Amino acid sequence: MGGRKHTSATRGTGNRPRPLKRSFYARPTLVVARGLLGCHLCHRVGEEVRRARIVEVEAYTDDAASHARRARRTPRNAVMFGRPGHAYVYFTYGMHFCFNIVTERDGVPGAALIRGVDGVSGANGPARVCRAMGIDQRANGADLTTAETLWVERGRRRKGERIVQTTRIGIRAARELPWRFYLAGSDGVSKRDRTAESAMGVEY
Image (cartoon, rainbow, N blue to C red):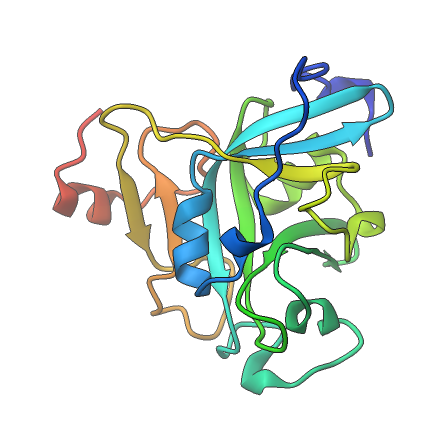
């Protein structure tokens, strides 16, 4: 991870990092998930700061598709039960990393999976986000509110930019829950829901 082919993100922000405060994350997971859209994910890799705009997220709590289903704590999912604003990174299918941000209050499981970003090429999908941003298991448990190496900065949705709310993908359980959110028209979205977009009157 972190090869030169993924260095299309900004080299150095030129400004002092301004990470989101813990209070931003210490809210219901679905609220945080929507709020992350348009924000900027930043990761310091050596002398480079990779910066990308979050355009797709999925929410997980203690539902049937979550690692913390039925609120069962395990060594793997312990971070999800901890303080909000920490990174939860897990390895899946023996080859991919997925990056989540812990939500809710301390002791209540919740996390927002970052599924897609704009600003780096080919980052439409959770594994691709991690590959492009240079995020791996070493980031698991990192405090995103301290801005040491990994953090999120506040951003804005563009004029006329709309949020599509639809069902999660790539899971077997609780597929009916409309807990995936994305910005219509963004290249970083992993999979569009044209039915949901049509119902909203989205045209582009």
